[in-house]
Image 1 (cartoon, one colour):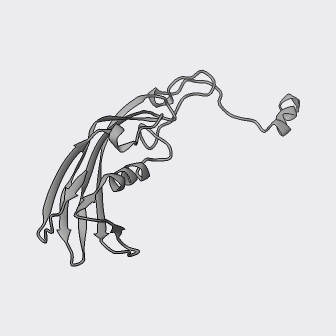
Image 2 (cartoon, helix red, strand yellow):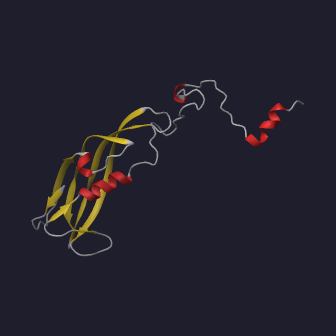
Image 3 (cartoon, rainbow, N blue to C red):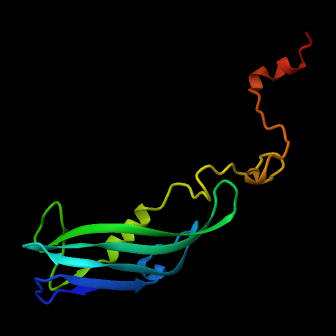
Length: 157
């Protein structure tokens, strides 16, 4: 995902489609579907450039609570400054081209959740019988008793 500048001072629009393998974002938890689409605009900002746009990605994963397979898509906005000299608020670029690959990769990886859920309030599986609790209660007694108090269950009053 290289943008050739050719000394341009006017806006440059870009539109890329790249495989998830080329971005090296594959993981054991998530399967990326189709190409990653990156589109946006690169603007000259006096001494540097500002790239902004949107990353569109589709993915498939298993819910961490109920183990259902889920397909979803995401649109991730981004904005990044580029400068040809060292600065703390801009990414350094050399020559007459800007490579967006690492920035796109970092945005996708940083947007990954800690846990993958089919929905925010997923109830998961019953720890006794394995029924999906999103489909209804199974009737199992899932209360847990502190083992230090388990002797009291046999106490007759």
